[in-house]
Length: 139
Length: 290
Image (cartoon, rainbow over all chains, first blue to last red):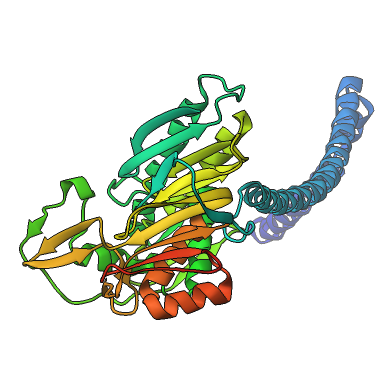
């Protein structure tokens, strides 16, 4: 008789133990999941770290500004360089033109200085009775 | 009258300067230097001369003297209908005149006897100072360079006073001497007579000098550009009075090639005073000279 009553009691005990274990597990889960240590950590952050983070953000912003400025200035420099190159090429073309003109002018001046002995006048000659100072012969 | 003589351009150059001119002693030296400078440009017997380089390369940027003489020669070619032609180089060489006259063998064996007709293309570009020769064209300024040098030298010497420069028969004057004219002797078979030159120049061309033999045949340096061979003419020698020594050289050569009858007619038409000496010993004056 006592043996028949003991079996249901063991089953009940096991069920109670299982329910208790589940309750403890659930409670532990909820506790861990709430991360109570984080709030404490937040409340306790080092002000130097906060300052460094702010400084980092500021530096990143400054770097972006500098990159934009450099890009703008390089673009402007490139445009001015192209204009300068065009001006130099135009000046070189002008110089070559002037040099050719000067050469032509120099050649013309030299030609003007050089006498042209083709039609420089009519000779004045006659037969005379004077002692010759020289003679002409086949050259 | 101060005189000075020197050798240049294969001939004797004679300078006369009116005695009372205030000449410095260096005037004749300047004339000599000018002749030698121009000879270095125009000689075909020196491979380093500007003319030789032009003949070798066919196209060359040259100095003003070579430009000027080339233009004068081309102008003369046109005005004489080709009787004067600077492209006679190959014909002169083929005739045997391939070195200075002093070095020439007076009786060389016969060579290639074909004529070398002239008249090739020559282009002068003043703007670029360049001369271009056509294929196979070579220039010889033997018939004009001396006259050019005489004129240049006369311009130099004339700064010292009235003067005459005579380069082997091609002569020019500047100013009048005390007696009013420059008396110049002209030889003829009938005897010499004297021309009084007040201004301008005298030049003589003929086949009586610069002669040699090749293969037993007589040759001379006056080339007929039409045949490319030494010219055949009933004239022995032509003396011409002209405005300049260059013009005189050109006219003397052109009249020589024309032959006696035509030369006299042309000289009369053009008013070119000249003395024509015929091979048969006759002497004809034309162009208003009497």
